[in-house]
Image 1 (tube, rainbow, N blue to C red):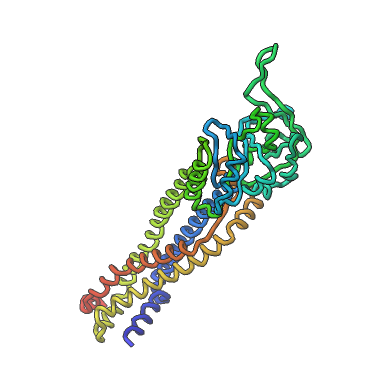
Image 2: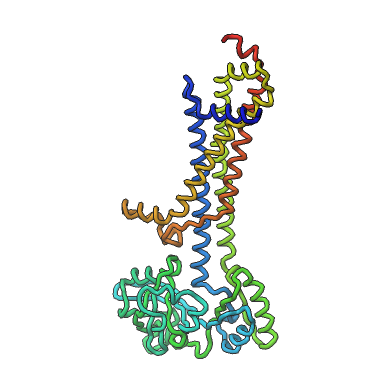
Length: 419
């Protein structure tokens, strides 16, 4: 019975409609402050999670899970090494490739690019480039046709589309009677892809591996092998197993690597940024929660006579303390629930909301050449929501202790002296 009246009085104080309506107003403001802080924290964490997911997916769509490369940039026995790698049950595919730098020229437009020679069928098994084609088909890279597939940003820079001609110029020259001349070859644009990551869409072009061998004069050699594995997070372990098999069966000096080594600093920086953002935004939640202190202090001052009456009719100090803890807890709980509901709703629909705002105002929130991706991603994680809500409520609960303790220590005679 005692607990019920304490909860009832605490709830009445939250929705107070007494002559001093300012008290109920600042209670509402405290709720709103906590709700906004929780909302912002959930949305920001969801955006960071979305960035991490998108970058990882798009990087792995174009970057191999693991690679085997020649120490001098040439791998002569690629087919034998490929068969050895595929003997590992956790290696699902292996594809040879040739990497090189080139200058692409179309009319008066020119741009540097990374040129990658691939076998279309095998490349489709180790990367997602075939599924990223917007125009044309990766299968159009037939040996001897000298076709080329460009990223959408690179095609826009060169102002070309499918069917247009692009001149590929290499820094490696040919000695002629007139002097050293750069080596060039005309290619036909047969496809355009878009992965949504500026680093690839702007700087990477694909040709057939046979054409690349002729262009770079590698004969039967390649730069290396790209591997796809069953478990991307176990790539380092799988690479070690493959390396053991290769060194056991072949007398070859090769370099093994995996995606975690190539991009470890990149993803580590995302984790550090996420932790820093969480700590900074958590201070906003703390400030909003500690606003409850000022709210309850004003309530205690306003309710001095009520406290004195309750004490004179037998209420214990602990009961008075529970009344004001209940009031502060309700403010914190309602604010947290509203913030969680609004934050989850916005995080789940953030991409469409941002898209609508971009269409209405004619602006682009993310520049692809600065932020790597052009869309604002969002990934809501239940663990983040639970953690944020729990911390916000605990901080709100802690904020109630001092004002409630002051109320419990109020002497009835002092409170009623001037009434």
